[in-house]
Length: 186
Image 1 (cartoon, rainbow, N blue to C red):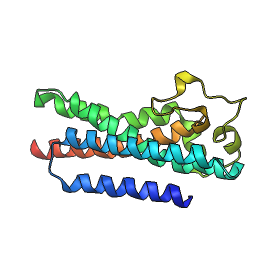
Image 2 (cartoon, helix red, strand yellow):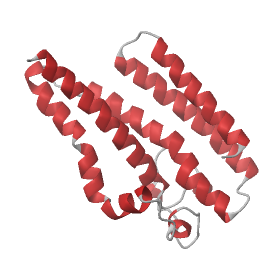
Image 3 (tube, helix red, strand yellow):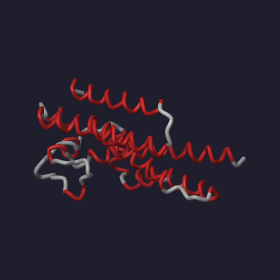
Image 4 (cartoon, one colour):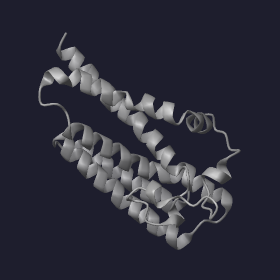
């Protein structure tokens, strides 16, 4: 990772860790974390726009490893915020709700099984297709997320890496919620 990217990443992690030390409702903390990630992603975008990519290898590394560290967290905190906003008001519905939320990871894996295997096993034979900007592989605007402001900052598969990262961590979050509910009802 480039030094400038590492510094932005470390600043984001430090800011996120500071939230953990502040007592506040979970939804507020998730919203703050989302904003921190979005601000740092914006800083990273500016850095990449001005510095560019030194090589194809550098570009692949950015889309496969660096960008998802930021966008995966944006997605993760979005999932937390939304899940907390829609928890059923009646505690009787909580176990089913958190079970369904925890099940999102399985759905994602089922939907993207080939890519998850490719990524998890460390394959590289499709990296130039998946993680390099290309006129031939232009990312359709409808596939871009609101934080993907430029095609210069998009590849066809970096969003799947971010979603995988977010789903795995969200699964842990929802599973902990489900377990804590189960312990209360024992």
